Length: 64
Image (tube, rainbow, N blue to C red):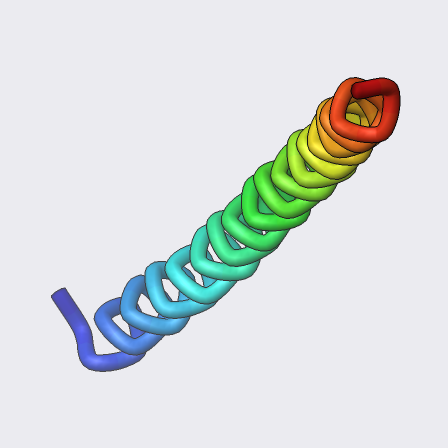
């Protein structure tokens, strides 16, 4: 193989690697956002349930 061919192959592989890494990073960021959204939904649900339970406990204690 000539030096020019080797340089073209190396450059092509390098560009392919960089593009693959960009796609992988964007996928990872998307997964992190998805997990973050899911966690926020779960936390909001917990807040609602704990507020409801707290209200019930206050009501039962005050009715005595």
